[in-house]
Image (cartoon, rainbow, N blue to C red; front, top):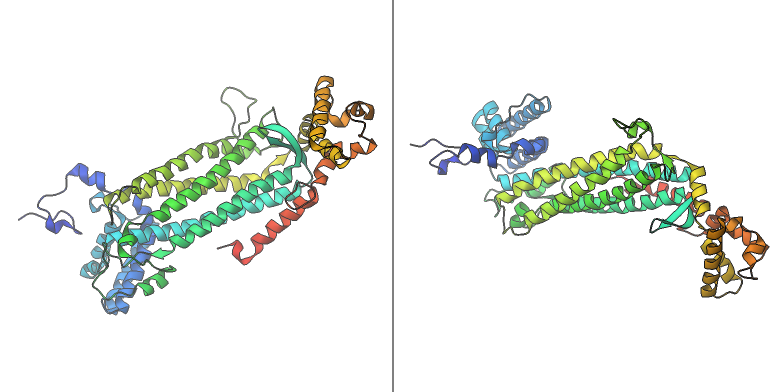
Length: 467
């Protein structure tokens, strides 16, 4: 008579699994990070089974005590993982049976690894989302405080990476903050769909045991049980949605990184990053490389790849569970690790950014950034906008030829292009006058930047500011 090949499913098989196939199909090398959440789910499941009379009180207590001991073994690095047992679930169940005997085999009553793993991933991701949320809050707080400090620091605003109009550094930083605020909304919205309980769906059709899924959901802090057993075991939308959030977040961090890299260069010299966030060159002793933002910029492609991988993984799967779904964990885990690392780096680095205000100011002064202010001035004097645009264009051409900014020209020089121009023009040609004139909500006037920073600070202090 043949020997069983695996304690969880070997009864139907007449020969052992090929050694390579055993290694190829095993997931324990990466899904063991779900161990703590697997144990949490099992404790709730055992508690529920005892509540409905499937397990006795003594059996429940033995299972819970054994699982808690195993959790401690894993936390202390004393647990021995085996690829022969395939995954985190069977490794823990086998160890539980070793510790408490046949009662350990009763734990799996009324559930399948299909709903078990779906529950574990949701528990794990829910906790990870809360950690990501905290780092996002820390980064947003740092941005707000830096923006407030730099509310009046003038720099050139750009379109097409060409000098456009003067803005303040604080205003620019709050633009970054707006991106992150949207990201945090998406993250919290994603959490709502993560927080649904699959356990009780069993393999695909539910179970004949008198389980109470609402009790299990309450014990594990889920909002509700999943409505459909087929969907419950096969759904990975929540993992894709988190990775989509992560892709948008990393896109925003990458845009920030690109500007930080530019601004630290000798050609811009707008900011300085502390040495602890930079590295040097093995051959060029003068180098100070902005490695943190460069690496975050590079990791963005990695997360994009995981999003495409997960979408492709799911696109052709029939209902319900398929072995393909084993491939959901590594991209999700790596996305989480990448997001948490990038956010920590930015949350640590951003408050330490030092603005080189004189360089920013000089760059704004050089680029004819008040040209639009001159056009607006002419319009207010009754000149049609298109004519004003032409007049200012001629003035800029003259300035390029004479190597003078508009604010450096004399009144006579300016009046050669339009006699409408008077002494009061210099009030709008200064950088300070230009930014102060944008004095409306969303504008770059220093008072508006400070007010926007305070509104953002107040919003984070509200009850919804933390999960």
